Amino acid sequence: MKVLILAGGFGTRLSEYTHEIPKPMVTVGKIPIIVHIMSLYAMYGYKEFIIATGYKSEVINNYFTENSDSIISKNKDVIKLKYNLNKNSENQLILNIIYTGEKTMTGGRVKRVEEYVDENEFMMTYGDGISDVNINLLVEHHKKNKKLATLCAVRPPVRFGELELQGDLITNFAEKPRLQKGWINGGFFVLNKEIFKFIKGDDIMFEREPLEKLVELNELLAFKHENFWQCMDTKRDKDMLEEMWISKNIPWLK
Image 1: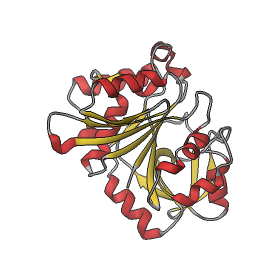
Image 2 (image 1 turned 90 degrees about the vertical axis):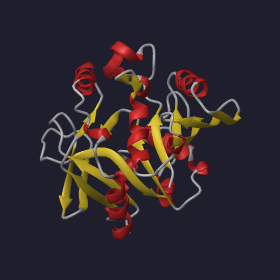
Image 3 (image 1 turned 180 degrees about the horizontal axis):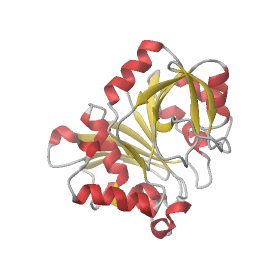
């Protein structure tokens, strides 16, 4: 199963760094957060990635081509290469880095990589959030319940939107309402290829029409994760993750 990472947004709330580099390339422990995210999936055996780039895509392209084991193919908008997380050849990843437009919204980026998803199911996450979520249990939960989409529901700070749940079924998806009831979209998804038909173009936000339609059809499931989860939206978030790294309290790598 391939893992899609959305890595093309402007990252305006982290402008201290993103005026020069895209948010997924902001580092924790001198390692881009996108590499931390890939390390999480690789721990569970998922080693083929689609990276959907946009804003400052050349920074991502250059980093991975300069640090690749070998470049399999390369053209204007698509680079396929082998990348080692460390010196251990068992941690070799296959990366498909695809330019999906600078101003494309999240749903549009998902739609643009459709031709590169060759299995019935794939995983998706954002290039700015990390967790200790058990990826195998997430996938198992998705396959057991046979819904079109499963997302990891987490309990973070109150500044995010919320999910309303009936058991494990999501009955309402509100991206950023005024009231908080505890669960939000943690950004780790397992998706059926049917999801592509709910996305009509570049201007579609994945978190709005597609997910709202799945809720309406009773096809959006939650995988509840009570443990560590942290996005990197602001400098405060980045500094907190950096402190964890320095103190060697790194829950996403345990």
